[in-house]
Amino acid sequence: MADESSGFFGRWSRRKAQAREGQPLNEPERIKPPWVPDANTRQVAAPQPTQDAVEAPAQSAIVDLPPTPTLEDVQALTQDSNFKPFMTQQVQPEVRNAAMK
Image 1: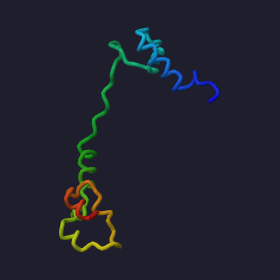
Image 2 (image 1 turned 90 degrees about the horizontal axis):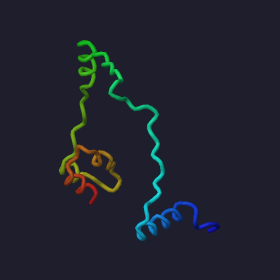
Image 3 (image 1 turned 30 degrees about the vertical axis):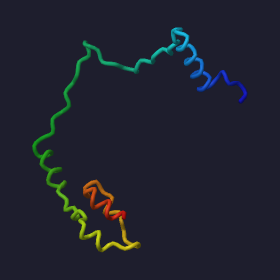
Image 4 (image 1 turned 180 degrees about the vertical axis):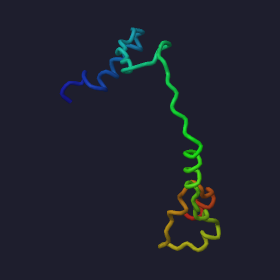
């Protein structure tokens, strides 16, 4: 390497040596976020949705999901089967493990 005193490992090595010797570490100055609300900042409430707007997504959100695979479905698997349905979060761990075996 051209200059081992620069770069990540060089800084890391120097900081470790300083910490062992009990020297104070030169911490970089923290950067403040571009805007932080203070006590004098006025907060505006978001507009509340109307009752019609609340009911419409609830009705359209009802979807018929396929049934989760069971141990009986595992019995029908072959090497060429699609294992993707067994990898979802809704599948019980023991069914997933049996499908992978």
